[in-house]
Amino acid sequence: MVVARCHRCGASAEVYLPYARMWFCSRHFTEYVVDRVRSSLKRYGMIKLGDSVLVCVSGGKDSITLLDVLWCLRDEFSLDIKVLHVDLGIGEYSVKCREVIEKVAERYGIRPMILYVKRILGMDVGAIARRVRRSTCSVCGLVKRYLINYVADVLDVSAVATGHTLDDLTMYILKLFITQDLTQLSRLRPYLEGVPEVGLRARIKPLCEISEFETSTYVKLLGLPHVVAKCPYINPESIDLKIKEFLTSLEDRSPGLKLSLLRNYLRKLAPILMRYLGEDKVGINRCRICSQATSGEVCSFCRLISKLGLEPEEVLRRIREEVLSS
Ligand code: AMP
Ligand code: FES
Ligand code: ZN
Ligand code: ZN
Image (cartoon, rainbow, N blue to C red; front, side):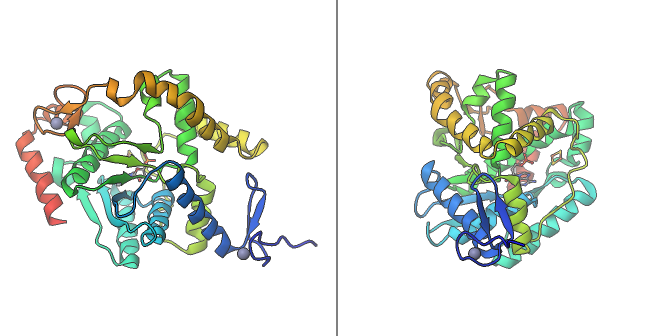
């Protein structure tokens, strides 16, 4: 029987990456992932030496990989890394996520900032969604985005990093193309500039060229704690998951398809969309109530608060308290 050999050291290999046509031993696979993230950071101009980065960690394999890789690169880029986790109050699932974040933070000797939605809004995201008759995922997304922006502004970081992967980005490219949501599509980039006048920080997606197969292999080989359970509100029949499955079936037949979809999109269509629909064409100002960025007069978070019958001043006070105490 022929034993596969690591492309880098010749030792017996454990992982095969069809798109790269390379076998790796465990050590060289994890080094390869770090190398690829380093080149994405440079290729898309995501960070500068000495940047402070707010790493948003859910506890899943993707954001745990993100944190570990940025941690490996912190000296090279002189990064100041801060970690944020939003506890959504989703029963046992959220408890597991929090435990993972605490374990991982202990590993690196850092103190994560954990914000509890229940303490801020008086109820978990499921209860909020039922009250305002919206899907839990959309309420969860809105609350997370708001709190992440708020913390990034208060901590005055250079960039906010999320664990969106190649699978996420290619899924969104296809989905937004199908729905012809060209404004959102124009904002789909690994590096999104901040708008300092309204307190919006740059957004970066360092794992934009890393697949979910690679993140799950990375956490497994390094024995990094991560949450395996899925959020109970995920709809297995959602269009997002169907598009991901479709793209993965194409990738299985033509390895490298997702990477070329992303790169071709960024090289060809994205600059055209940016020219016609870029952020500078969409007025962003400060919310009349909370002063955070919004494209209208009142931001969607403040509108949600008012639908819940809560006092904005009281909610903003609780957010400030939570941020200062964590
Ligand atoms: P998702 O939209 O759930 O696929 O998450 C995309 C990215 O958002 C993750 O990789 C994280 O970087 C960030 N994120 C998701 N959920 C949380 C959370 N509860 N707290 C902090 N960051 C999160
Ligand atoms: Fe947001 Fe599941 S994590 S609804
Ligand atoms: Zn090797
Ligand atoms: Zn507001």
